[in-house]
Picture (spheres, rainbow, N blue to C red):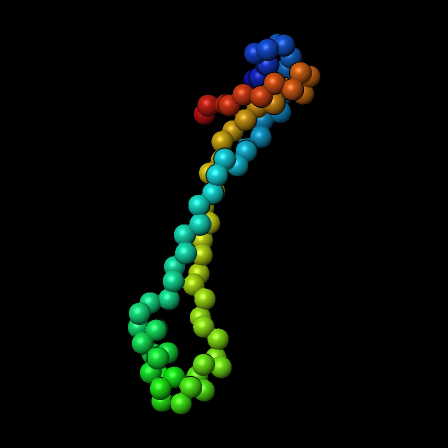
Length: 81
């Protein structure tokens, strides 16, 4: 099956996935970690402050769409699955 350009009727068409957006969700360290850190700071008279804070973890999810691009005229359109 060949795809044809709706503008110039050429069959010289490439289909690619295009990134449309992304969302990052960050999971921070919990209150139990903060209480434990505070406890260790008090017990060690502040020496625990030399240990760096624990960073939260993040995860990014991307959204994609399928786009066809005519190589003859440059017209681009969305392809529905």
